[in-house]
Image 1 (cartoon, rainbow, N blue to C red):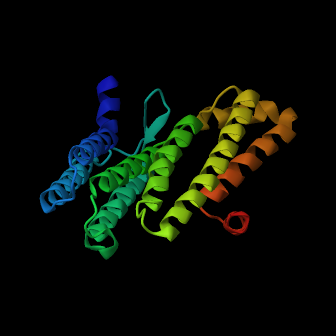
Image 2: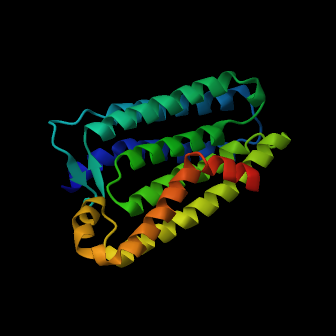
Length: 235
């Protein structure tokens, strides 16, 4: 079972490993030379290739729980993981040709993209609210830095600050909503929550409050109307 879990986690682990190598490359290189940029780009492609290689199709139609049932691998997870991987891959390709990044060191930029891709794959496999929270943060924290990566541009710095404030606020609401659910049901597993809900209907107001916090948090995370408007007006 341990080997099976490790095998299913290999796409996430490979992306994370290459991301840390890219961060090391960025720290070791003092100047943005053509060789450094080329090395960072090819390492990024290697990370995507490794993740695609390990992202093998699922055998059979039955879902495969792993990671103490906090993660599940099924057809939907496989499809969404490929969507996430290909999306971030094309973002990396487009970034190389972007004039805004001319002359900049992109090793750290590519590392953050790989970490975001790892978070997207993790959330596609999530079967527990704790994993969902961790995956969202793994996507969000690199996103804050990527938004402000063009430090010489005011709009980039402003966007990063706004993104950080809204992200921190929505993460706090999500954590509070999850804590309420855990206090009521004694579990954060999506499967066990579904089984426990009929037995805690006498705590309906608290359940509604927890769901309100979670829905509002997700609304801010995905810029859902009207939360996108509220965030823009507040900041």
